[in-house]
Image (cartoon, rainbow, N blue to C red; front, side, top):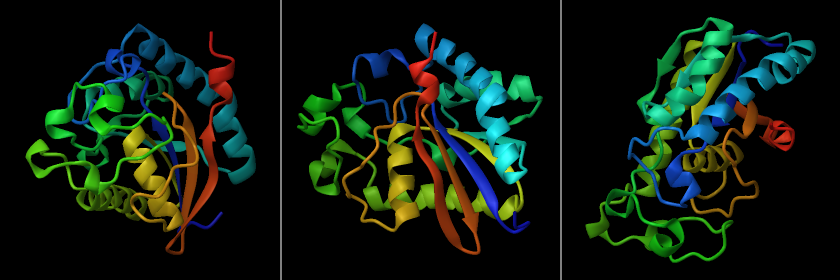
Length: 217
């Protein structure tokens, strides 16, 4: 393992009531519901008992940092793992969800005019008066947050708790795709993703890991 590389474990937050109701959350600071709180605990147990052990055996790395966006659903998801590993949660506002402006709180299918859950948001979907964050600005702030983390912690494994839309944009960035490229993997709540940054290149080691969701109690 190169001491100049950085591994990131990037995970979507647990369920909120707005997730269950299929409402656009964006920057609205919605807390986890009971299911989401249980998911956060289950995620923490699964990571410590299985997934992190596998990473250590294969790559010789253990988590040294935990980051979350500044929205409480991300922080609440990170908390059980942070407590279990005795690691402080660092806040990175650049990794928060896209700002959906006046569309926040609305059913996403109605707001976006999409009937297919795999269909993605593109810049042309929104009129300027809706005050939705520009997709290019959204992507660049995510890159700023990610690049800052990998530059600060070479040779380390960093856990990041973020958001579904943010993860979709990360995936496009890692693969060098257009901002409106069709996504290939649905990021369910607490889905796990493992990437490595080495010598200026991103490598996807495990994307869309959901084994723990299949055995969730």
